[in-house]
Image (tube, rainbow, N blue to C red; front, side, top):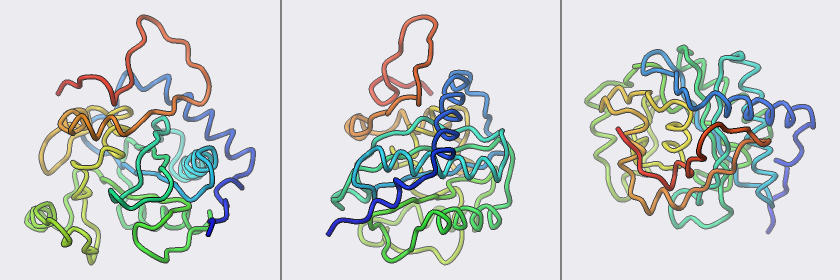
Length: 244
């Protein structure tokens, strides 16, 4: 049964705004000025649309709504094509991006706002890891470690079927952050110097530590419109050697 392509119903103004914002953020990315301290990071994804363009539009629409809530300081990566999650789940490829705000939004407030955007865009939570019209996950909130370092360590050690357990509350930063290329590559693009408060490793270092095979499964979809570059063109982040 086909899933209705509700994601493609973004208003023209919202999608155009999202396209322009992503293009403008792309021009500023190489500086990587978002530092390790007080930042709020959000992963944005969609795969319920019939075609990639619909999922891309959903991601851009969500980014535009988040920017209206959090202000023009929000920086958004370019969209990336990523395999379905979890591995082997089947279904359409995702379009993913990461948004970073260089200030702390209290996590409970941030989570409520993200759920509000999802609801406004028509998401209904029926099953975990099913096809998602839009999915916004709070990845990190400043240097906060929730609920505490010991609980973080327990969540990060889970293996096999136990990884599907649902936390009873917020776990920050996301305990699977270091394993998820669809979060780390966009995050390293827009905030390479951000540091995981648990491991102390930068987003760039975490991305570099991913197996090459996982990085090659992702593909950057490029900025919304051509960006004039100065100097040699670098290969996509997924395909090049990353430093610490």
